[in-house]
Length: 116
Image (cartoon, rainbow, N blue to C red):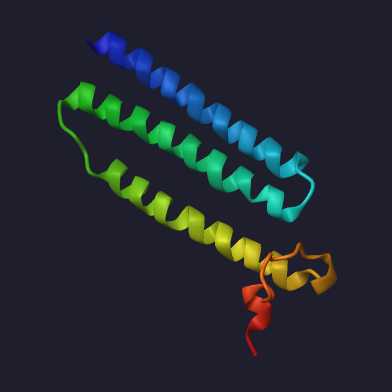
């Protein structure tokens, strides 16, 4: 069982590293700021999630105990990544001239531009 768990943890670490690498590459290669949001929020979240799975599996197989730290980090990560993306997108929209923004599909303008 330990050898299988070590292999699964190793694969999870490799997958997590690949997601981190892909996310870093995406930040450099994607054209616009709104496209660049996907790289740090999605790829990094999956990369850190895979590393947390590997860590939890390793601790469980070596000590026989489940730890709560990985769960707390996961909850914190899944709560803060969308908020980070939201604020980065808002900052970009505030810095973009109104004529360069895409249409909203409604009679109202973008939410941050409607406020007085």
